[in-house]
Amino acid sequence: MERLVQIPATGRLSDLERLNRTGVPSFETVMAGIGAGPLVADGIQVLQVNVGKLCNQVCDHCHVGAGPDRTEMMSAETAGQVIELLRRHPIPVLDLTGGAPELNPQFRRLVQEARALGRKVLDRCNLTVLLIKNRSDLVDFLAEHEVEVVASLPCYSEARTDAQRGDGVFRKSIEALRKLNAAGYGTGGRLKLHLVYNPVGAFLPGDQADLERDYKQELQAGFGVVFDDLYTITNMPIRRYLEYLERSGELQSYMRLLVDSFNPAAVSGVMCRSYLSVGWDGRLYDCDFNQMLDLPVNSGAPDHLTSLLASGELRRTVRTGRHCFGCTAGSGSSCGGAVI
Image 1 (spheres, rainbow, N blue to C red):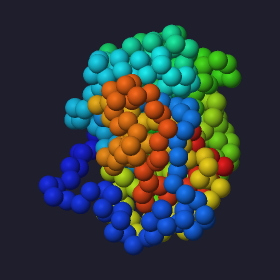
Image 2: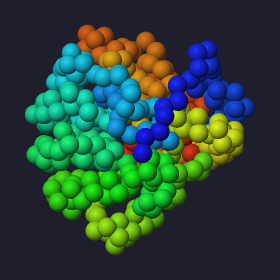
Image 3: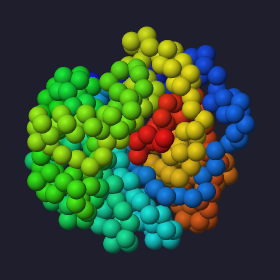
C-alpha cells in the first residue's frame, strides 16, 4: 500500500519558486485587474491546527507530504497554547488536521478541552487510521465528544481511490465508514460525517451538488454507506501533488487551467479570510497551504502562538502567491468545499 516519500534534493528550488517559473501571471496581478486589493483576515471563525505530519498513508495528492516516516509532532506545550487561545477568543471551530491528526498524543486532549469550552471540533480523517489496532476505540471517542468527521475519499471507485492512495485503501475506507455509520455518524442525526473529493487527475472538481448525489447513490447502493455532505476540494500544486504534475509534464497546463478558471466571485469566500492556520510547532499561517509552502504570517501580525497570546491581535493581511489560484478557480475551493 505504501509508497516511498520523495525528499527534495539539497539546493532544489522551493515549491513557490517552481510555481513562479511556470509563466502564469501572479495572483496579485490578476487581483489588481479586477480592482481587488490585498486579502484581509479580520474575523477568525476557524482555528485550523496541523498537529503533525505523521500519517499511516502516503497519498499522491498530499500537499502536506505526510507519511509514516515523518517526525514533526505537536508538543504538549504547544497544544496547551492552542487551548489557551480558544479560552481567550471566541473562535467557534477547532479544525484538527495532519498527517493523520489522531496519531498525535495531544489529539484527544485537544478534542476534550475544546469541547469543554463549547467549541465545535472537526477531525480531518483519512478513514484507515480508524482501523489501526491500538486506535480501535477512536470511533467511540469521536462519537462521545460529538466530533464532526471530515473524511477523505477521492472517489467512489475502488480503482481510482487506490490509484491515488495505495492498494487496498478503498476497501479499508469502506470498512471505516461502516464503523462510523454504526456509531450513528452520517445518518441524519447529531453526529456529522462529511466526505472530501479530490480530483484524481490534473483537472478541476465537477459540480459539488452533482458529485454528492453520485457519491450517495454509489456508496449506499454498493456498500450500504451513508454520509451527510460532500466537499469538493481542488488539488493544490504543492509538495507531492506538485511532484506528480512535474513528473507527468502537466504542471504548466494545470497552472494555466487554474488561472484561466479564476473566478472573481470566489475571492470573497476564500478560507484565509476567516481561518487561522497553526503549525505543529506553533507558528502561524494564513492557511494550511501557506503553511506547507513555509510562508508564515508576515504582515506585522503575530507569527507564533506565543506572540499571539501576548498581543491578542487576530487581524492580519494575507500572504498570497500563484498557488492561490487553486482556491479561486471555478466554483472556488476551501477546506469546507466549494465556496460558490
